[in-house]
View (cartoon, rainbow, N blue to C red):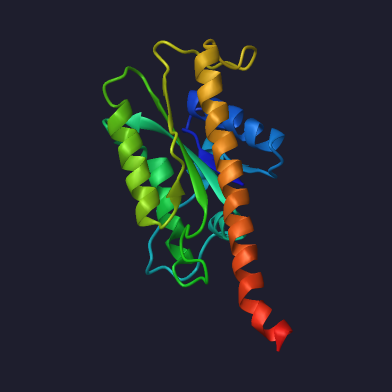
Length: 199
């Protein structure tokens, strides 16, 4: 499972929310890889006409290519996804010619952090629209965290137990959906091979 999210600020609320969700996924048995704000900030602006990718772009692409699921966390900036997170998602255009193009067949969890409730729903809808455009499967539950009311800090990960449970729900749903997709794919492969073994 790949976690993508953060801001240019070290240990931002967005990163802390994503970390809580990924921890829940780990507890459910997932192996996780985290791409936080510092890494996202190191990515150049994605340009599809550029054939030479940086090592950081290659790392993101190859990690997502091998992943079964993702959790994406973004702050809400002026009613939309942050440019930092959007650029990372744009970089995944390099997966377009894969057997599993883009995020096809992968469960994707959504987390949005906002300073005030006004943009929470808009940004969550926007993030899910991007996931759909990349052929991902957004989980039914998406978490929104109002950092004006809820504080995410290193000493005390979250001041609101209800928010903790929401973030953990995202991690659990993504894990269970990834397992369900994997079981479905295995069953489909066995079903296709069955006539050969009978013959």
